[in-house]
Length: 151
Image (cartoon, rainbow, N blue to C red):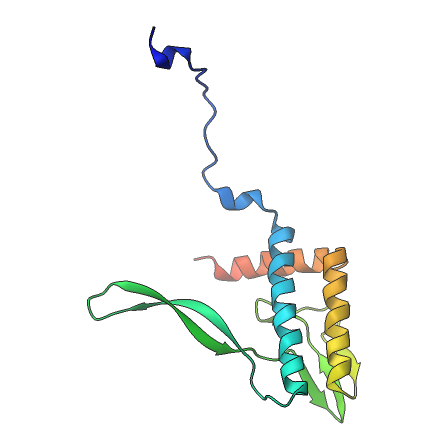
């Protein structure tokens, strides 16, 4: 008897794209929490007196023979906070666009110190983990995907 005849063959095909197994909101939430962690680390660095906080980002570079090589490149983290009239404000961003947590309110008043900025960023991170910003993040992720698709 043939070995193949003993197997239970099926007409079910494997999914063409396994990326869709993670929902849009889970992917957006994960990216957002990572970026919030970078911002919190950047605030901590500013509190300690360092003016620049860098992270390693993977990039591809072509050499003279035309072959692509992957290497790590240090990039500065752009702060989401700014100071105006002696008070710090935090603008929450997704895909380099500000998120409006309420209609017409693109920033959060943090207070007069960088410690207050760190507190606000930690509170936003807890809100994201709890799922309070799911609708806003899903809309931002969908909009970012539209901007990146070829027309």
